[in-house]
Image 1 (cartoon, one colour):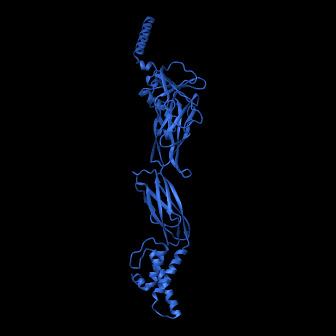
Image 2 (cartoon, rainbow, N blue to C red):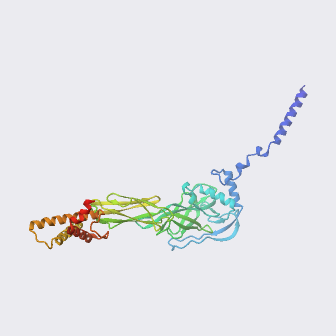
Image 3 (cartoon, rainbow, N blue to C red):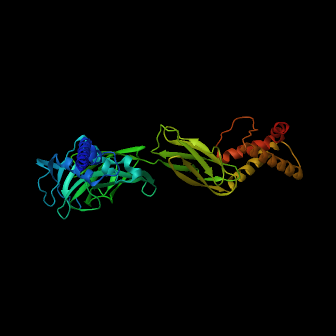
Length: 426
């Protein structure tokens, strides 16, 4: 009986061993998918990073001569580093050595995905990632594999003090297979080239990123976008980058001083710099004092719009303009007491009254009464003309200043009730 039980046990053990031998290799070892490097994964294990490092180091490298940039040197366009004879990436690095490694498409995409994780999320889409990687050392002679990046911090905005559109480009080198800031054994230089002024002209970076270093850029009269090229002393070619420009409005009231009481108007001129002509750029206009001819206006292809404003009382008002995606602007307008208007109307009324009574002889009382009626008639006719009602019987210019007021008042006094009768009847 014991022999039978022993035989059964041996059979069961054999079956168990056979079953184990039939288990797929993928079940006996850790899954290969967990060790393979995923270019799209946001979290990578040390094994993945090590796999990427080995892939990079299988390529050939060229030694870069990166001459130091003396302080105070006249600004000039940075030239790509001069490549020397190819060397093996496994060759020992000495303190300060710099090598450039060109990557295959897969490794390039993978390293690009990695370094973009170190860039603020809202700016990743605008980042320029330099081709290839740099093999160098830190200040302790430890080997580093770096990738250079650049990205705009924010759109260029108009600075009224300097009368230029100003912004910044952030640059840096990111350690592909590590984290944390490290001090480089030799600084790496960056420049921004294009239709912009940069400050500084050449920026030398002595540590890995983040944090990043900023180069200030400014443009005089840019379009909606400005294309620049960011170059580095450790990259054989620069990277192009498009800097967005936030359009800026300028608003002018001409003339800035007009007579109050609704007796005069001024032109409100709005222009936009760096506005996209292909867009329907609508403006919203407002005023703290005065009546605008329109509270909405559309910029033409030249980026300009025009409305008018009429005074309502006496004082100082402010006209403001704004629009979607546009930096707003404002201007002051002063409404003064209409001494000139009243004086011109009074003199015109008296002159018209004298012409009206030139051939008649009246007593002093009758003459004074007639002149009073003439002046009142002149005042009414002028007031109606200011409101847009022309009673003089022929076209008059829209803007004639005090001379126009004098003429209208004189005609109103000269013809008196004959001008007012149709208006009263209507």
